[in-house]
Length: 485
Ligand SMILES: Nc1ncnc2c1ncn2[C@@H]1O[C@H](COP(=O)(O)OP(=O)(O)OP(=O)(O)O)[C@@H](O)[C@H]1O
Image (cartoon, rainbow, N blue to C red; front, top):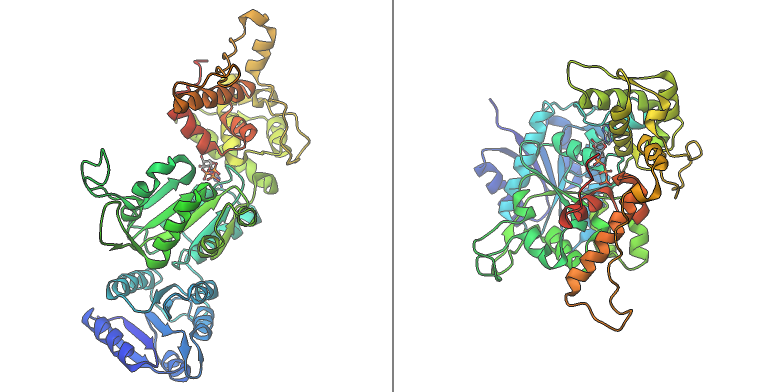
């Protein structure tokens, strides 16, 4: 078996030799070129498992080579070497199709890690110099046959091939986490961990320790050394969910970790290299957050190299039949069967789904409880009375079959209202414990939202302007449980 072949393109002879020696020691065959012209000649003759090019070359820019290789040799990953601190070049190269980048001075550990992942990718692709080859289609968790979903899956297969940070946008419940998992599963990192972190759910004081880990004795309660999310995701993918919720001081630390590809545990004196692919997601408009000064522009720029937009369910209503069948199959025991009447399916198809697929899951789960003889009728769906496919949020809570029962109850039989938290300050008194007082206020507000929506957590989260996951986290933290129905 012949060793994989690497092409190094650099006009600095010292660096070229250092790269060559390191790669040969890794058991690889290496060709070197000192300009674009020589690189093109090598590329015309050989199939490479990786091309590594400097950005500034005597006869042009490395990014030209990135464009050519990404267009004509799709199974050959190409990485660039950028000058120290030139974030723009790195981002431009990733956008042009580079698989990864290294900053000068080139760290040999990072070089080795990058080469290993390029080789894994080349092997997965079959390693052929196949002009016009398309990435192999892999099984996806994202269900749907609409053009929008087919396009989304194709985009995921393409972008899974690089290290470029991906920013996933889309409404709550539209499948952002599923898409992130797909990107990881289709990448050369699939056998390494996928770690999803909800940035809105970590108390600010603990953030640094949670992200970067800590050393024993760094603070009270730090009884052992502990890794953070970055170390846990090493070699794999780190998903920063609800990234817009990161407080500004943490944004600075995160930017540094991304630029340096190194992190320092709380209480440690040395940094350690980390190799993670970042995927971020938010249901907010991050560009607007930048304009309002809530999100750092430089971090936005580093995270937003490739954008992936998840279409809301109302833009792909054709997928509802398939989605509903799959969800129902998952919800009912294997030996029983549940069907939707044609009218129920039509009602779902003309509904706007502000909570997207998660709302469809909730609707079907509730409908199952009211369905007779395994048949779900329109009334069992208890859809909110909104104009068809209208996106606007209604303040009208849904009419659920349970509502009908409650409506018939005498007022005194209805669930008692939660007593409002005592408002400190009304009578000049201060709360004895501010955290406890704030928890009580938050608990009361969440309970009221849940009651208003008959414990539909998707709608309650919408009413409160937070994501479903944030609501779920807050409910857990404040011990708010759904009453037994
Ligand atoms: N295309 C899809 N096919 C199958 N299931 C889906 C699809 N999209 C979303 N889901 C399901 O909907 C639920 C919500 O998905 P997910 O958590 O990925 O959404 P999200 O956009 O990350 O939500 P949030 O913004 O609230 O965090 C999950 O149970 C997921 O399995």
